[in-house]
Image 1: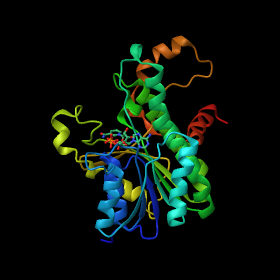
Image 2: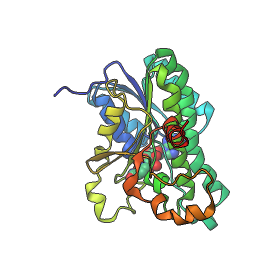
Image 3: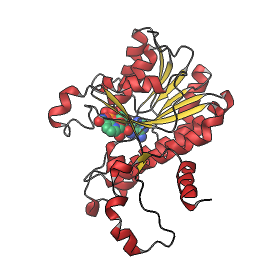
Image 4: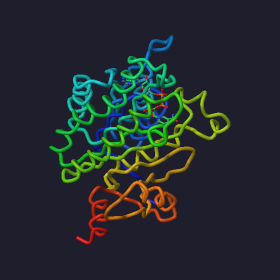
Length: 295
Ligand SMILES: NC(=O)c1ccc[n+]([C@@H]2O[C@H](COP(=O)([O-])OP(=O)(O)OC[C@H]3O[C@@H](n4cnc5c(N)ncnc54)[C@H](O)[C@@H]3O)[C@@H](O)[C@H]2O)c1
């Protein structure tokens, strides 16, 4: 079995001082990528920031890495981080948008600050980092972007309306950049991870022991590799499992002169998952309707 290699590739991993980002950075560097280890994290008593510790670890293992402590979430910050990659290593092939924060509170009590902080780091971070990387990647005719969504973004979660909104927005960004980047050789996907980190240590209960954050990075390695042509997809990953998350539609109801009563009377049929098919793009959805309309 051949090894996935990233020799000659340059990667940025945001929020790579701790948790999942740290594992992503270590694995990408271990496979030959030169890595910008970005994180705003505070230093410990020894003074070395978490990102610096990751860089030291990569270098000690013979890899190449450089630290960057810029906060993601603004256009200016994103330019600085991308510039760190291109000025240090001359290119940028892999962008892993991973940095994240939580500001959980029930919807009725959530403040504007809690909403905006989460939107800025997750949506702003992903949007501006990708936009700063875009001209470099389109210029090379090559790029891999791996975004980070969440179960909350797909299914919702109590006390996380800000985070759920941000993580759902990241799915929209992922699918749209996949479409816009296709002809420039840029592939864009999102992971929906589950792992024991500082962010989740009090949430996972009995499963925590099985959710080693190192079990998420292998998917990022594959999505970051040249051989992986997948794009616009979302993959659940955690505890050793990887699965594609799909959007499906039931066969549903079709009536040329649709009324509310017809919707009511066909409600079981409209909701019948046993008739569902996976829908991967807007054109496919339109084709189903075109067919029903007989046009
Ligand atoms: N751990 C899970 O089970 C889980 C589940 C779903 C989604 N996620 C997502 O995975 C990503 C990583 O989370 P984690 O669990 O490793 O959390 P973590 O708190 O361990 O790591 C997040 C890192 O991001 C850094 N960071 C925060 N704001 C930043 C900013 N503005 N700029 C740069 N760095 C910043 C932090 O300093 C920290 O090191 C996040 O996007 C999170 O929402 C995690």
